[in-house]
Length: 267
Image (tube, rainbow, N blue to C red; front, side, top):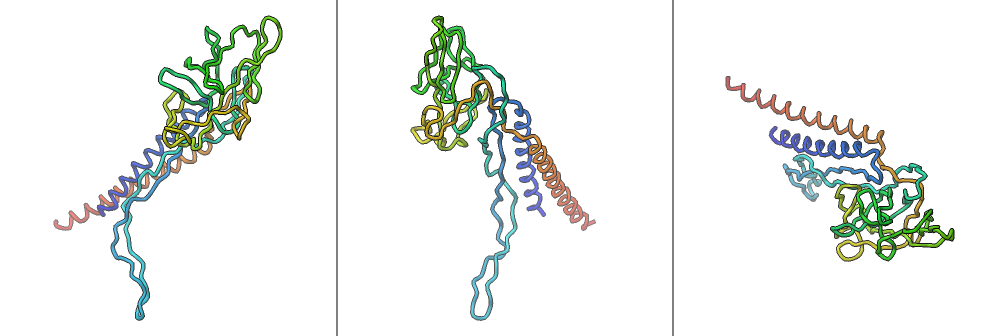
């Protein structure tokens, strides 16, 4: 009976975490470039009541008899599937179709993002909403001074038209490709930081290549990649987690009632 109470507590903790992740997914359903989270569970070790026995000449083998001791969180994964597309018609709004991330230069070092809502700052540098600099394939900041019009191709090449009305290629946006994007660390603001389990280089740093090359994403100008959260899926998972939480509370209350009956036996 006490085992069932502790198993119920472990189940409640797990489903509470699952509800936390679902709530975060739903809160970010309209966040540009957001990647949803997913919780998986694992069972805790089981208490062996009877060990397995091998078959003999006079008796067949028997299986072990075990009682499980509850569940625990196995992992909280970031699911990097393609998000929904939203057309904006702004030439500096960029959507990635495929694998890879934009590279940003911040005071704390390089970070990565799928959110392509970019702007030109007062010095004509291409930046994101927080003022972090967008980098090109060479790892340099992109400056688009003296540009009357800007167009960006699928390969990330930025073409500008200046006062002389002659188009010229100014820079090419770089794409960071990770061997394991699920290993990236979310740091808020639609940003990710490389970890030792994310990429193929030192400290998980990615391979930086041009868009459309070696399987990297292509760039769509005038559109944004929105969240990959599916509300119908999240609501279904929320109902399942809620019922699982309720069921585990019933285990605890039922075990408590049985313990109360045992206590009443002495009266």
